[in-house]
Length: 440
Ligand code: SAJ
Image 1: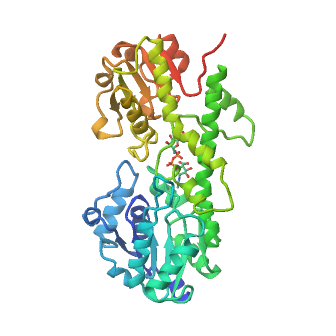
Image 2 (image 1 turned 180 degrees about the vertical axis):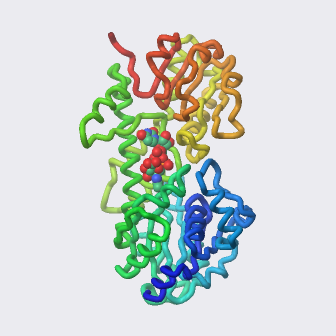
Image 3 (image 1 turned 120 degrees about the vertical axis):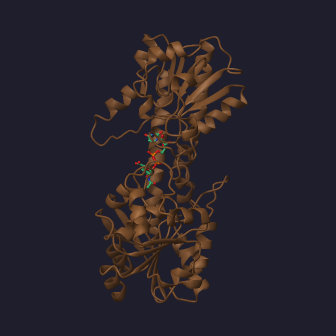
């Protein structure tokens, strides 16, 4: 351990990063920039080639990352490969592969198991392995440690050390988050946790806290489940507001005046890489606990795109238009405002639901090159427009112009980016998530 500690301090420690997605690429580049020699390993040869050519394989706008990657590759501080052999020299190996859940909400750790198996065959004596992927509580204990022991013939805490430092990066802010957010360094021994803290101190000034494995596994899955439940509460209150003739935005603003309240925003659904799956990772394999709150929250959030579809059908009905055959424009295909990431996008759910009911759908999104068309051309002659993503481009829309461009003045706002009073005064048949019909 002492030897590794001094190699970290001198930056002589060789680092491996398995999985070159949005987590692995950012941390590999940052560690290389901090002075370590880094070998990145990924199964995708095209992604490896892209990185070795000095190009960033991550979609969308990631401030500083392309330039940083180009620099560390040019300086030969970061090399990418599909081959695990170079990891034999690594003193520290991070694992940042995908840990999805499948249709029946069971964790799929195939990539994690494969990475552990291939690493175990080459890893050297005393290596510190750190899992950064989000995993279910108990995974280090029951899956990763035994697999590494079995496949390497080395013993935990003697032949190798194992830590879990869950990633906390977000699309569009990869490097900023990596450098500033607090991290939990879970390990099987306090010494290994201390070593992790020394290591991560080289790339972040965020708070670094030692814990055991299962605490670190719980922190990550719990923080995202908490967000999902908070969003679900906002969504459910939005439905109540619609039912009783109130406006969610106003209610939320007044509730949040009270210290200690931080109600999130009712909207058209929850997409992304993390929030929809992490609640299921949190409760994976539990037998004597029946999780009800997080299951209900998932159901509420997954139903929001369908609620928007109901608002569309209701608004078209008021305008005397059937849903079948209606020409609709969905504004926003990404899952998140001002992002080009479409992972689990609620817009995709809405579009297929409406198409199944005979509507003709056009998609506009300034962040998606294939849909970054002229807004006025795309909405010309359509029967209705549906805002599904709170892109800045949709805030302060010229409603008077939209009214003349559309064939019928029907507007549905799934993200509360349109001024509702202005829309109604402009003459739109207008619906919004959380906005009830005022009774007087
Ligand atoms: N959403 C709502 N209402 C809200 C907030 C979000 O409907 O009040 C929707 C968004 O439109 C999106 C989805 O939920 O479809 C997820 O949005 P998000 O803001 O949670 O963004 P993510 O998916 O990038 O979540 C990440 C998470 N970070 C990590 O996993 C490391 C999450 O823990 C962060 O809290 C979140 O970023 C963040 O705060 O930006």
